[in-house]
Image (cartoon, rainbow, N blue to C red; front, side, top):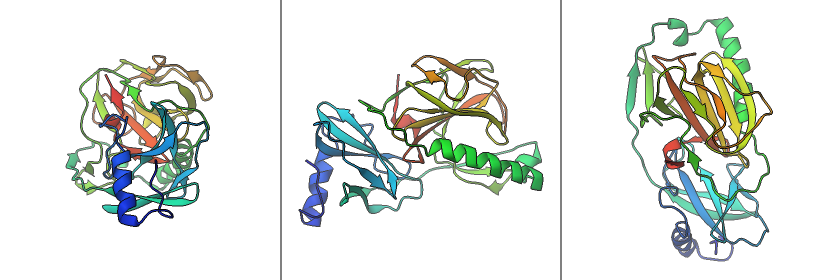
Length: 273
């Protein structure tokens, strides 16, 4: 059962929650660190889905071996220590551990990708609204899991969370996984979903965003071609596009992003081979 702050002393509630969090859930999914995922046990799967919120955003709830589990995506700026979610209006606490991410320094030949001019900044602002809306969408859908197949074969970097420097200028942390592959390599849907956005964007290049339900969203950037349209329903294995080098890149690869409750999480947590 879930530990609710209104009915248990705080110390006991946290202890109960910690023991519940890993029951019948793959250990690799429960990753309570900035950029990770916290799995909370919500009790028996009796078809009565509770309302779960984190930072005033709805949280994904899925069925797992007869239990309901919440999958809380933790932003990279999540404070280490005690954090909490709301479950049907009651506060539930959990602990977040520390995690050190490395730095990455890249040289970009096109200076506009480092210091865009005003026209480019206006374009970036327009595109950001489209991308953010797609990444934060919450579509009601019953889910019996949250794992993902690999979207393209190739060496996977551990680049998520890297603090990036382009031409020695600091930029926001990297919020995806880079998968190396030759240009033109087919990219496939890792889970069924609905294509919520496609476009050719300044930084991301040719991009596809897929909504898998309840705030689980995946993003595919720098494509050489896009094989789907907004509104398309895709099944596991359907082609989304092909690997390319469009946008701000140093060579062909797939930038693969995974989002929960509107925040980027480490894709490596959810990938299964």
